[in-house]
Amino acid sequence: MAVTKEDIKAGLAKLGLSEGDAVLFHSDLRVLGPARELVKLSNCGADMVIDAFLETVGPLGLVAVPALTATFAPSAPDGPVGRVFDPDTTPSRVGSVTNVFLARPGRKRSRHPTHSIAAIGARATEYVAGHEKGSTFDRVSPYGRNFEWDAWLCFFGTDNRTNTTLHVVEDWMGLPYMAVSRALVKGPDGQPIEVQVTKSPKGYRDFYKKNSRAANLLAEAGIMRWTKIGGANVGLMKCRECMRLFWDRMLEDPCLLLGYKGENPFCDEWADKTIEHVKSGGAGERP
Image (cartoon, rainbow, N blue to C red):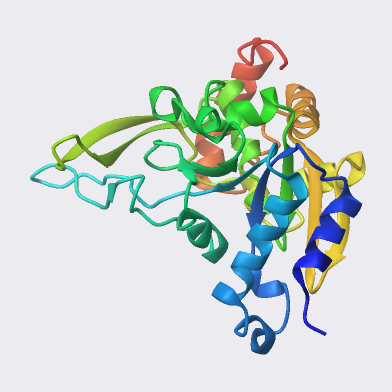
């Protein structure tokens, strides 16, 4: 039997999502149901999923999706090259649902050149504002507002490998392996401008793996609620609970998200520096 919008709404409500909530959801539409059924739906089911979230939180709520882009600017003899970020036209690289979301009328999108977020709903303009002015996961950014506004994090057919909020912990702790990168953005005259991207999450991470240490910690802590909607496993947890869980554990185990020496050349380069940074008090105050 094909999954319906009402099935999705019922599943989200079972997990605890309700009217007036703010939620950032990561998605993989491919696992929702058989391809032969999904192709019969608008945008292969993406519209149904988006509508289910919007109707669950209602007009006073907010629904957001990651809208990450491939707009880093590699060096070249004549200057940086690469795709130019335009918040109005640049597609997301993180799934079909996010691009259908970007095509929705009235959606708002933050202006960060590599890790933008798009949102629909109450306070959406406020939610996305100023992202380009600070670090990638700055406290004054959509990622910071997820914490400030006590938003939900939802994993619709995905798992902790897509949990961008773990990079927020890395940013706020000031971990030394967060990079400074460059990107190209569309300037006021339509020509590309090179900008600096601070606290960029480049390089290897242990939590990008299935059954990572981070995934095991989440399972042990029990802060993620799970249900099945169609063929998709769907998880929901509070941003604050997630960040505080990892912050506390990383004071003891600074390389939890990065990985340990001997596992990857990136870890070999940064593990000792990361441990020294955290153990010397560089992580700062717990949020």
